Length: 124
Image (cartoon, rainbow, N blue to C red):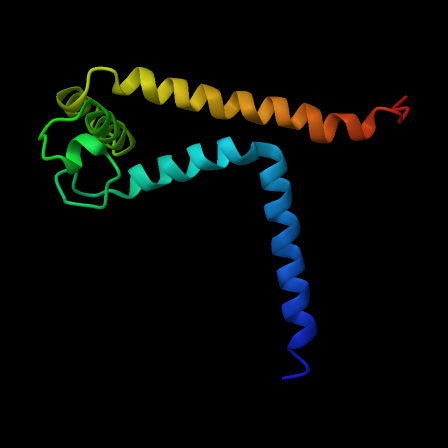
């Protein structure tokens, strides 16, 4: 077991540095958007029952605009563009806005955390 301990420390250190850089690049908001899109992409059946914190859905309303938007984005991520319109008309614009926001966060955080490191370096 003693032989594996340095390898485990090296692996956990490597993972920690990569996650730290990922957090610096995206920030908490970007990570939440990415995880949300991954969750929506993992939904295979849009009609399946799943845990929800939606107050309208929990009160028994069948159609919630927010839930329809999530299902619409899920259909877009599965390549079903026309089916996404059945759930919500604003699915494609919302998906584009989310992607734009993720790239905007990457650009801002890259400038803050990584560009300022080379500020005093002469690259000539």
